Length: 232
Image (cartoon, rainbow, N blue to C red; front, side, top):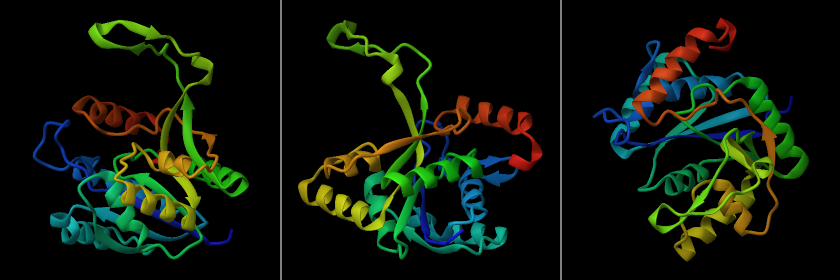
């Protein structure tokens, strides 16, 4: 497999919803920080040429120490992020040197190589792809006063995850436009969509959870015990 992929791992979050003083990406799961598990997963993927880690300015040196101790040779650099996630990804993009780039949340520790490969293959086929899973629950659009406004067709709804993969030049252009216009999106795909570029989905895994609350961490510990050892 050609090594033509840069990976940006965003590990610049805070622990506000987690209710901890510790930033959530540094919380440990079986003795290893969450963000490190994500880095190691992409380090095992055959197309990965380099990994750029984005973290808070105060955590750059700490993050580098973790990476050095874990021996992650594909990590190219650790850079300081910005105020919002979008700003942090933009900073990471400045260090990318490959034609293709994937962006992944550092607090999604259960990203497996088959799912990375599925997203990578779909990205190469269509030009832009995100990992996602079909929504299981019925979703309601709710207005003021708790009034249900609409019930979208569940068969058309997918829960979007990371990684999300794009042509580097297109994602950089999308971020530059968003910055110039003061637009703040909820994910990188949204910025790409604003460029008129079509984005497709690759089927992911429901275990690819984002650790945001204490309950998520409890579930992650359960998943770690339940999954085969070769996937941990």
